[in-house]
Image 1 (cartoon, rainbow, N blue to C red):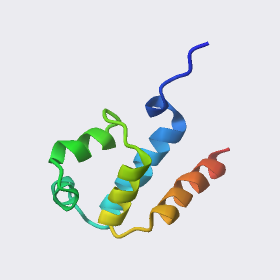
Image 2 (cartoon, helix red, strand yellow; image 1 turned 180 degrees about the vertical axis):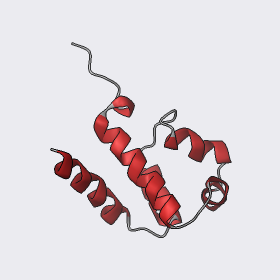
Image 3 (cartoon, rainbow, N blue to C red; image 1 turned 135 degrees about the vertical axis):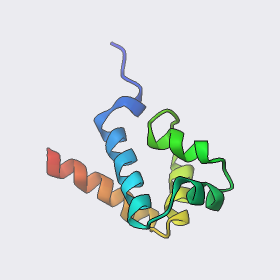
Length: 85
């Protein structure tokens, strides 16, 4: 049995949605976030669309660049999953 790549799972899509919403909540553009991360704008665009997978360190960097506590942001991902179960 082949496991699906986690970038295509419902949980990963929820993570991307929460991260995108966090950026929008702070009224930060992809360009502004990319500058804070010292990355090109395409980096933000690709992970938000699920074309690029992010690891836990990148997740923490992104959360901090948006002035969110990474643990709280992850908690919101997990809580969103529980409310759908």
